[in-house]
Image 1 (cartoon, rainbow, N blue to C red):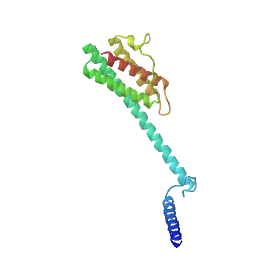
Image 2: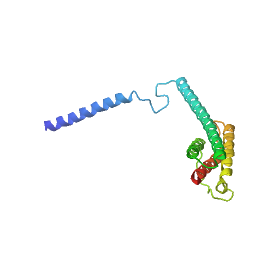
Image 3: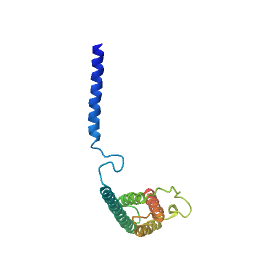
Image 4: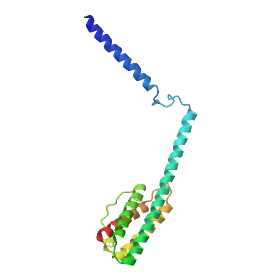
Length: 180
């Protein structure tokens, strides 16, 4: 009988020991309830202001990156158009540039919050019916249109026109790359 009581007492002591160590660990964690974490309202306000400022800086950086990608896309499309006018065909380097352009504009579209519009490329009057020469000119002019639209946007706005234009550039790049 004494043995059963001693086992129960040992178990109770172990539980009490674990409970006290667990409560000591939670004392260092911030409280889930406002005002109970030991911060004054002024400290909390300063922290919130700092977080808002950091988010604004991240947004500004993302917008600058979007504009930088747009400039890179424009440069690639200009190089592709000049290369095709010179060679009258696609080189391996041109195919790589088309792949890079497609990836770059996809990042732009994703940065704008857009997605593929899944529009059929073979519709009448679509890029699929253009000659290679016209398709490269259309690619370059559409990329110019995309960059112009990106320049009009701010970090606080989303442009549906820019998303649609980026989808067109992506489709054109795929079409040209696959048509070789």
